[in-house]
Length: 220
Image (cartoon, rainbow, N blue to C red; front, top):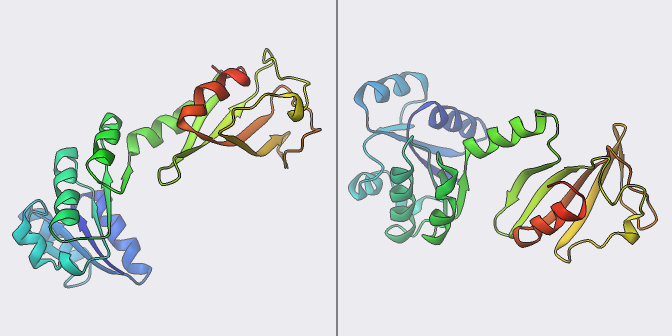
């Protein structure tokens, strides 16, 4: 595939390097002269283009019209939005991916047509939450196209579902239990299986069903 990356910071650099190793054609765009020079010395010749990915003229020079995807990973959400919108609307790029520094912008980006958003802040928060004692409900991943989330639920001793079978639990309609980890052993859910305190339950759930799932397992 031909992939254009807007933003030559550390994220853009390592992303370009890994994509090149996978055999893709990559063009990394960076507007800072000093950073452009540094990137040009680190990466193969022709991989880095000096220019502002927010400008249509520069994107045209980069060959955005034939790009399979444009990935915007600058440190500014506004710039990433402009890069992806221009790629989508002016150059008809099929796939746009934007880095989100502020997770609150996620809904806006999707309303404005950005295909995929990636939030390092949200990912770090999820990792921190998973290590904090007393945290019972963690969102591991969001499947945006399907409108689903993969969540991990640690069953507290006070939960009303403890010692009940899965068949006795009134699960949200928009939820599917995928796996239970008990004493480091994976168990595939069955209707006659009892839920025990300390079980780690992995589920697919819609955003609408998330709060109901929290209440069901006592993981508020």
